[in-house]
Image (cartoon, rainbow over all chains, first blue to last red; front, side):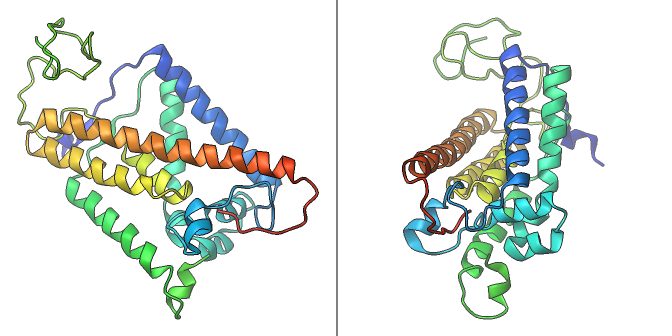
Length: 145
Length: 122
């Protein structure tokens, strides 16, 4: 890989280390809560504001229910609720590793420089996904939660 | 070195401006080298905000993340820093709104405790 595309992490402040500890704690607490309590049909979990206002699905609709399924090992059930979100779940693993690095070592992991073109591709994918989830015809209905 | 934003003189090794907090360009690095300048684009947070937080503000953060890397590749360091600031702002807005909605929901839940009505979650 082109070495110039990897950005080395600089040492961070104590404030940022504490923020990372907070992020990790929040993630752990959310994971425990999500594992224990089923979001479907529960009043405890928040409703999607976009769905509440428009009755349409946003790119994140179904993520809480899908996260609950992932934590219980039901990847296929999670995929049925929000397939794009399941594909991006490894990012959460990366967040845990990188935030642990900041919290424990005071230094972020080397970051990969993603060319702008690929970020625009991702943007286009999410916008298309957003629209496609709301088309009430098979096969688009697979994408809806 | 002088801050590009407010003009305050700063130590040559300073990371941020002591007056306005603007991230300062690092001395001794050519401004046209793509990628080596570590201006954060908050792309990971933007994606997570979009797909897990259910708030479309994450989309705005993704657009600014793309701008950060586009401007870095073009050698526009000051522009990249500006886009970086906006990407960070929209990530915070997305997560803050998500947390506010969650807290409001808990308040409503506590007030209406005992209700058996089912709702659609995220």
